[in-house]
Length: 178
Length: 117
Image (cartoon, rainbow over all chains, first blue to last red; front, top):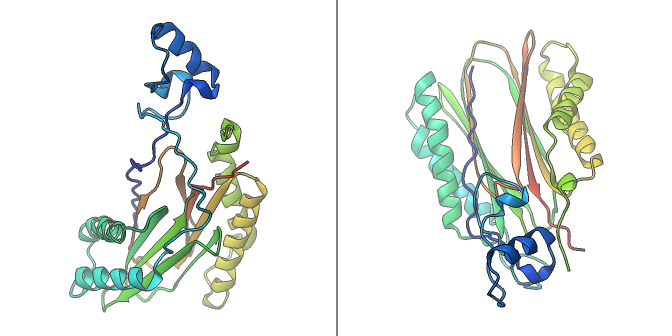
């Protein structure tokens, strides 16, 4: 038995920029030494020197308050279930379980599902996709999942597919993020 | 007004979380052998314990905990996950335990919940 997990993709749509007038001291000092002549509020580069976060040199932008307290469009469970059913059936229909093939297949299916759910364009939702493919060998198993989230905005969809030699389960969680 | 959350509040302490998972699994299952009639109860209690311990940490996170308990039969299992989130604030960890007849595999995902002050 082996398992591989993959963690992908940053959200590039969300950026925050530290504006010097907001009073983050580290940034201020940096601005003063580097750009002595500019009076205007400007964008600071490289968050790295503040010792914050990542190895990325992403710029950090503060977004304006939109005063939106709830999602305009919720996570569409039936649509996502339909996507899962579609993808799993088409990829796994006539296949037999083989170790290497199924390793590649789980990753592929995961990525395909994520791409299709992203295409649904549900704003402000973070997506987590889990795919399990296993061999049918008369064993017994139980999968369960529980979440600590906001039940009014967050949801999940799942679908399982079986044939004579394998089974596949896909789960998608959609979590609202303000 | 600053909406910054301090490093301590948003840090994901791997050792703490992994300890929580291990303890929940041991408490719920211990060294028992696989019993189909009890497995439902096991998965539920493992996941519930995990989640309650995590919520006690008091961090501003939403959690997703998944548990798979499988009988050791020589069958293969592949798992993959793909996520669309913000890498700097969100993360996941996995943990698996194999005993005599039972394979127990956990995935825990945490996503930042913004707290407005």
